[in-house]
Amino acid sequence: MDVKFKLIIGRLLVMMIIILVWHPPDALGKSSAEKNGDLLMVAIPAAGYGAALFLKDGDGRVQFYRSFLLNLGATYFLKTVIDKQRPDGSGTDSFPSGHTSVSFQGASFIQARYGWKYGIPAFAAASYVAWSRVNADRHDELDVLAGASMGVISSRLFTRPRSGVAATFLAWDGHYGMAIRKTW
Image 1 (tube, rainbow, N blue to C red):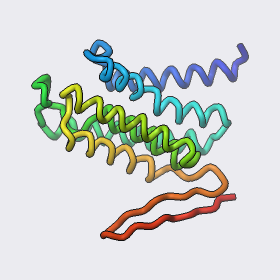
Image 2: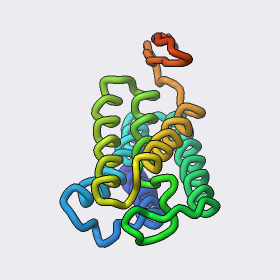
Image 3: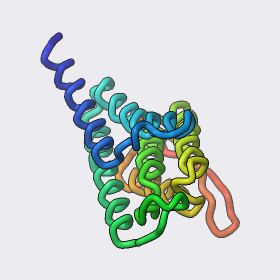
Image 4: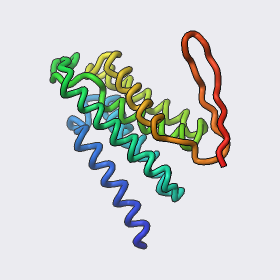
């Protein structure tokens, strides 16, 4: 293995360790759905960061770092200051859902940086993570909605399209539209 490949693998492992330390997988879940959600929670942001590494996208890596760290910081700040009981009674750190915020941060990064072609499957996987948290009785709908919103917002603040044309769907005050942006 060359040094560059080892560096890429090392960075991916460090990122995955950070996610797992902040989100221990609870003995990898109790049900298949919960296990799959736990694994996707790691895989989605790893895919976004991995794409930036593979494509030698230095700007994308910096954008990912910023949105990832903002998302983790904001999520855990809120978990600390908002004392909300989990639906299953296992703790008072229910709001917002960390699994969901990390998943949607990764999905939003993938979509914003590399387009809807990759963003749609990423958002589908992130939605599965959100569903798995409610299904496992670890969160309610408000927890996962807040987590998803935080993940999307943190990526939107820092992530710009890599190149080409990017389309973003918009909704506000009962109006709907689409913004198209061209980058060179």
